[in-house]
Image 1 (cartoon, helix red, strand yellow):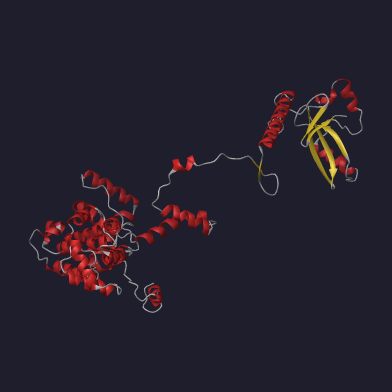
Image 2: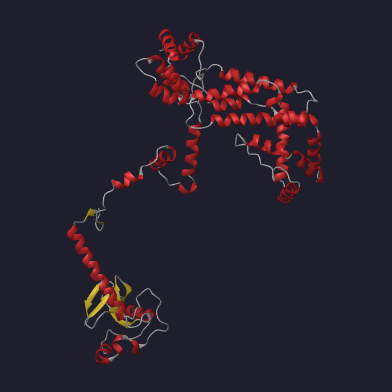
Length: 485
């Protein structure tokens, strides 16, 4: 990404030599806070001890929690460390330090070899001094990390947070309460001061090369010189004159104190009065101080395109990403007010088409007639329709519609009527005739009372159709109503 020869930044500088590249401020702060060998060993021992109490045995974990409740400790559990999360170590150490005495007492009650080793570690004053220092320094680093995060932070605000952190490190042990509580002025803490001094030097090496985040600029010539080093197009003379005029403007000075930098330079500062200074400010404000927005976008993409949505296309993923990352809120009332009435559509063909008002009325009448035919069907069958649970027991020939009266006697006398034969018997009878297309027979339905079944041969296959009587002159089938013979 940032390789000098083949990295993305190097390739972009080939087209634009004046491009300003800057490493992520959050990453730089993490690199500056690397621990020495001695303190790294203490940190690893602490993580192993906490994992031993939390994750080695679920029974031991339950006993620890019950012990902390009975001891009325400040917390009823330890936090489990996670290497993926940057703030994890600081929070784990802070929780441990609040209940360190209860944890030491619990460790003495355990009889395992590991518990004995960890108990000796907790009794070692020098190592516990290092633990106290790690609690304080990781607390300050976590506070800095939280200030550096956020998608709306400008590079000036990030640099102000870094310089504030550097000033907090300077001074005595008053800014390290855990060390004060542990040492009580009885032991030497000069080694902690050496570590803090090295940390300040690391921050100075990485961040002192960029000073655009200062609110009050006293050295006008130094500021213009630094601007011309970063922006080759800038002219030092006009910048100095504009900066002096800006500092003398009382109204702008008051506005600067109550507005954010982006609003101040875009809306308050006149482009005609301060053209060069305003251009420098806009170039600075548009720089990304960290990769927070990029990492937030990757996190949103991992949530959207999970293994359960693997068929999501790139086009739809792009739309979902825009909705997830945008800060704009839809104006639902305005959108609902502009909505148009839905038109009736016909999708019976290869493509949909809009139905006119007369066609829609015709369809409505046909649906009403279909509904009335269905009501008549339900009335003739006593509320029974195909697909619903039939009455128990299949009717015999006497229960068939054609089994009553002269009309039933005439039906029984016809050669194609076979009475109450089963589906398998009807299929066997048709097959015995040689599977000739058009061969058919009528039988009484054994599943639905008062109904017939038409069994016929088509394409050398036997098919069965339910025939439902609707009225005295009509027979209703799946394909429509046909006149009875």
